[in-house]
Image (cartoon, rainbow, N blue to C red):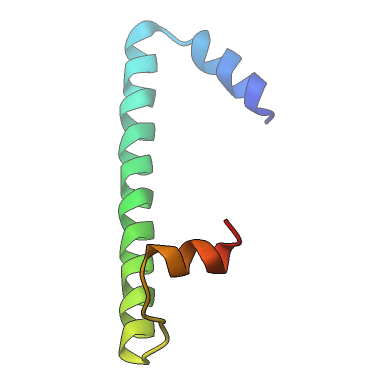
Length: 67
């Protein structure tokens, strides 16, 4: 199903069903966001434990980014 078709489908639902759909979608999005944050935090912690980082200041960061 194309994204525009999904929007049309939801738009044609009764208002109460649209509310339920949005509630479910928001909860799923929040859960995925939490899981992503957990994954990134664990990866960062592992990199820290492996001493896979550099020490510097904001100037060093901008220089490495070519800014």
